[in-house]
Length: 61
Image (cartoon, rainbow, N blue to C red; front, side):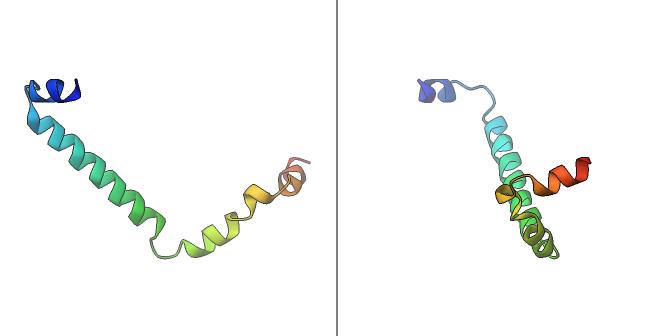
């Protein structure tokens, strides 16, 4: 069914454009994640999932 829909699609350039937008977004996210200077940020926030609420309770009081 998918091949029938794609074979009758009027604008094949739109599929290419969607792929290029996805590829650009994906590469941008990889760049954003591994850019210079983020190691200290990720080191600071990495224990947060294991924090049992001690820091968040202290900031509310």
